Length: 382
Image (cartoon, rainbow, N blue to C red; front, side):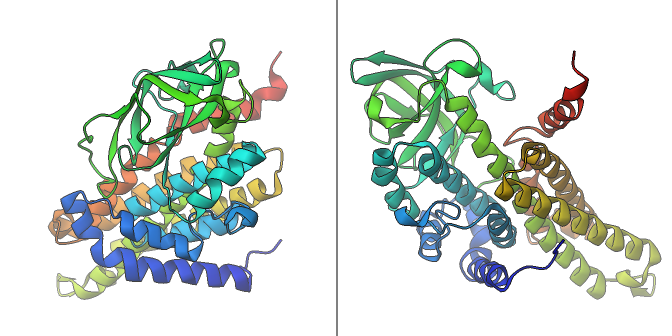
């Protein structure tokens, strides 16, 4: 059992940290305040191979593993949580095409996505189906060599800006077996976008409704076979959950560091805050919980890389645990700052707003508990 990183992984981690420090961190507060989507900076990440982290190298991907990705997103989120999360979503879309599309579709789209000539959005959630994703209503009706799409998707990151939308649609019966996955290009007649949502956090990326009204696309834009889309979506979410957990972990790392620095500078009752035993205990607990979260995340990523039978359960466990711990650590760091933590002059309130959604998206943490419980209890089912 090896807990140390390889030299290559350490180099990958350091590269992502430098990019976060140089390209993300100096602008994060401004992007948040102005609700600016830094697409130019996001595209720079492709020059480092971060647009196709676990996409195969013959189409421009980096060919790395899920543990490598976790290291990358943990590092990137220390610079900007929201922007790192969008890069994760783009990677999930690119991987789904690389993994499940025909060779022709794969070679048509993946090189443009791994270079970020095009950027992508993932479209599963609908206004009427969030946690119950298999109940989606957006339909794709076959008409000769085309599909005609009607319906809408909700809470779509990058909506209106992204060039390609990986969309889960209903092509058959109710339930998961009737779901397929298709690609829709921006500019396709019948594709439209709602107004930008007014959100608590994640303000450096737009979020909006994506609507389809008699939106006609070629059948050739389908990924895989009809009826396989829900399986693809869930497999994509295994990795997506790890990435979002990594974003929580990285943000919490930054929050703990801010708390350590602040408690070393601030004085109360005649001594530094970090000389107060109550705060020493709290800092120790925060650091311990983050280390436990890190071990769980890395183990789940390793299991996904190894394709172990329990990988999905461990991904759900890690997503639930790490995002909960991440939020709690950020919240504790804000509390240590007192009133200053509540001000936008300090980064803690932004960190708190950004990590809160991680407990909701990529499967709410309640759904993660359901996934874990079902897997634990399957051998007891009649």
